[in-house]
Image (cartoon, rainbow, N blue to C red):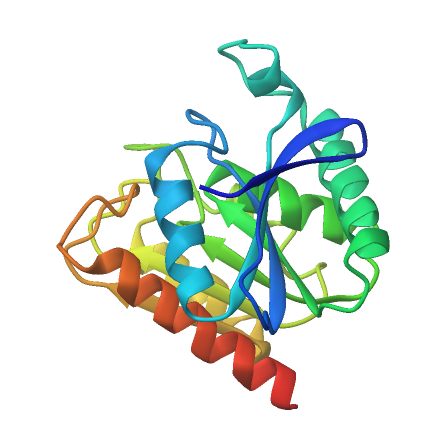
Length: 212
């Protein structure tokens, strides 16, 4: 479940296995906070593979409000947690990103001003567009953001038409990798074993980045 810690005057959840090789600073999706089942499951699965996670929440979620924060507010939240984590966990190589909205706000923050020391960005279901409203406007920050990127997407994700997402990622060049999980939707609720597959993919990618 993670250990409660406070960073940047905010409650967070740290899951740090013995001998952790890296830390993934993990933001939640728009509709559910850091204690959501998916967030807990992916953190547990990564811990089993030697990757620590730090989960945190945006201001609207902490306040119990239904609407997400304005981008500039969310981006400031990303940066505050990142900088605090960099100080407290300085010995761990650090990666940033998150589930859906959390990943999108992270890359916006990184594009505006690089997150110091970030080794790469990991997106768990990048929300390229709203359901039934295909477009690529939300990808405008991706080319500006520096460093390696890993995109994990379900083949049935209605927030990302793969016909649109594939060329967007291809334009980023070899620094970006897209992995498709057949049968999974935006929430990665199925098929059975998808959480383990996500964690294994992330771990393999992180280890490759650390070896370069």
